Length: 351
Image (cartoon, rainbow, N blue to C red):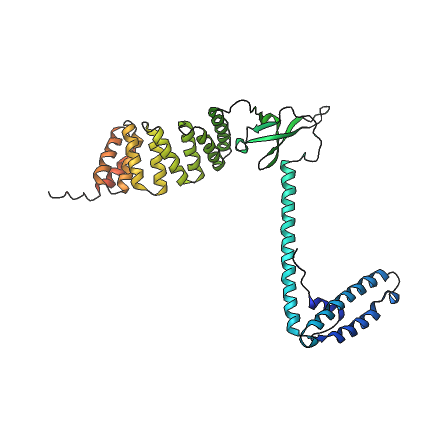
């Protein structure tokens, strides 16, 4: 523990003494205050208060006498009192800050325990048959140790009886519905397909609740189990994109295109993501690949024409927009054609 800082200012107030002072002045102040605060002169019922105050006076006087004996010339200056008071104030502020932080940590721990471990102080209502389990709703928690099974509700009344499992995971204790637990048998391997199914289901649940960032994290675990699973890569691309993490979405769609590049879907997503990123040249290349792999998709040709129009490629934009118009695209294509025709033709280099 840090050494206590002597607060000379507080002790001078206790002795009703002013700086500068020496040992003799401290002794006189002690005698004066002892006459006032001695328990023998205390009013009825205040003897204990006078006794405590006199004890504090004697302790302060002892410290001030030792300080005066060790000071230059046997006298403590006003500047020394100011320095001591400032140091004491800083020490009190630091102690207050630490006490506040400790109180906040205790409150957070109590809240965490109330939310996730409400049965921590109870004896289990049912013994544990299977020791290790995972929560299907949160597969990223991994495998935990089941500490007990608990029941809530009144079976004789109208309350529905619910069964809960108290499980200790690596990040802390969690209390979850027993029906969401799947028990683990370590004598059998955990196939990659089963891991993918768990994380895919949990990710779809998170996306249905609008938490795309959590869904993307779960899909990363599924991707690690099967790196070339097209369904996982497609859903992970969508989750990162909806979460606003465009860089991660671009990496995901790149991996998806490497695995399933013969189909237009990955390139179509890539074009949109690259356009959101602001990489129009990459978006145009991806849109071109999507249009080549889906030649009857009017929307793909329209997107390609629009991107080429932004890149000021007049001839390329006209070619793509005319293909889109021939496939039955709507009125927006005609407006884009007018903009493309208004561009300056590119100069043909003289050979």
